[in-house]
Length: 160
Image 1 (cartoon, rainbow, N blue to C red):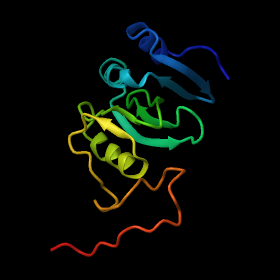
Image 2 (cartoon, rainbow, N blue to C red):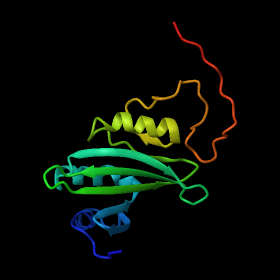
Image 3 (cartoon, rainbow, N blue to C red):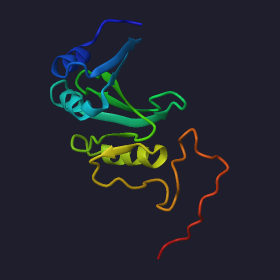
């Protein structure tokens, strides 16, 4: 594991001191764990000044019983250099919430809805945060580790 900070890390540290909480770079895989309240600012910096114009993916991980329980994982790519960067934001169990990246990437709209639907992480200022894979009456978020596997859900017939 390398302890040398990479250019994106240095740029974020310079612009938003203290917002990088941890990092690692192994086998070309560069990861930053950043302050969740700064993710929109950091993503804007990555896009507008560092060339990461492509939000490849966005997902969440449930680390129950660890605290903080949830991590939202963003995969960015610089199409000019082909560099990839993973940025993680941690969120607590009681109010899992991070700012939405929809102002920067329209695709975040769908990806954030999927994370909310399956994991229950809320994206602040999302324009239309509602279920995308499950029906509206579905209760809970089935990819959480504490979701009851044997629980029954109401059966909903087709709507006219």
